[in-house]
Image 1: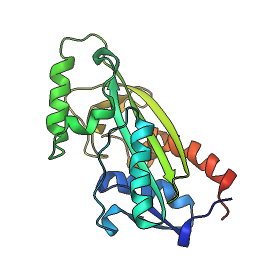
Image 2 (image 1 turned 180 degrees about the vertical axis):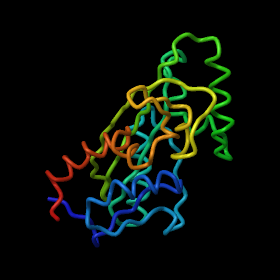
Image 3 (image 1 turned 180 degrees about the horizontal axis):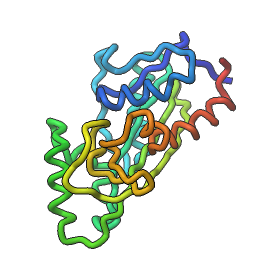
Image 4 (image 1 turned 45 degrees about the vertical axis):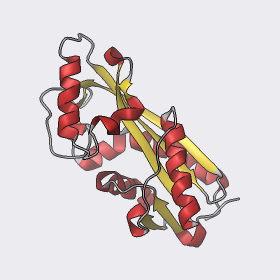
Length: 201
């Protein structure tokens, strides 16, 4: 059996939007939530070839430095018409300044003459202990590219990800509704199932 060391969990991120979303879905656990910001941890080089590999790289980096259990998220958007780009390089599309407005404009230019506007959001979550033991899962949700960007909720590529079932972009959805259906929550449901198998609360 495993346990949350000192009843704490460190979110392996410095991204405010990502931290807020993870804090929301982690409310089901009675633990104290921290983040990389509380420890001044710089995120590592993400040189994995998949979302899962990059998620583990980040979670192990934080867990090994804090000696606490860490949860990381590696997520991105992929377009079939672009051979599944940007995929794991979604954050890099936004550049060093994390300018997602620029990244979305770049995608619009690349998709302008493409008939297929289908896309998917992928999220890999990795829960890691300081010794490297980890649970890593992945969730996906399909949608369509929407231009111009619409909505001010969420973060990243949310304003261009149109979800046909609700006829809104993720940027337009109420955060509570988005949390229920998102790729991140789908991954978290899988993670929660695995946690219950091994974590002694």
